[in-house]
Amino acid sequence: MSRSTILKHPSAFLPVAMSLGALTTVLLFISLHGTAPQADEGAAAHIWQLLMAAQAPVVLFFAIKWVPRSPRQAVPVLALQVGAALAAMAPVYLLHW
Image (cartoon, rainbow, N blue to C red):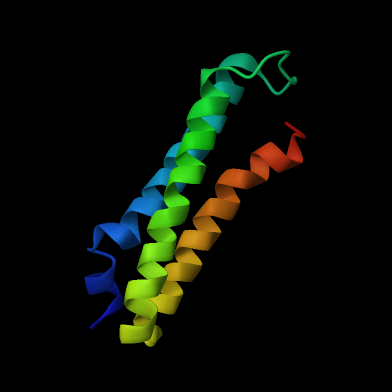
């Protein structure tokens, strides 16, 4: 089974899409409101939190299902999922939000 075949499964591509959605939420917020810390967490912060938290069980499911079956194809996809999550976390960490 190739990586492209594994990436067609929702448990493979949904965490990446959710991380990209979270990153887009942060970048859109920055473009509209700037980088100054806000007095109150708004909708953007809650959307980011939900997207990041909701992908954890999906990544866990992917790892449990695919790593034992096909580790050579699953581990790079798992690395992609983790990398996408770290990319979504980076602006929040760097801006001390």
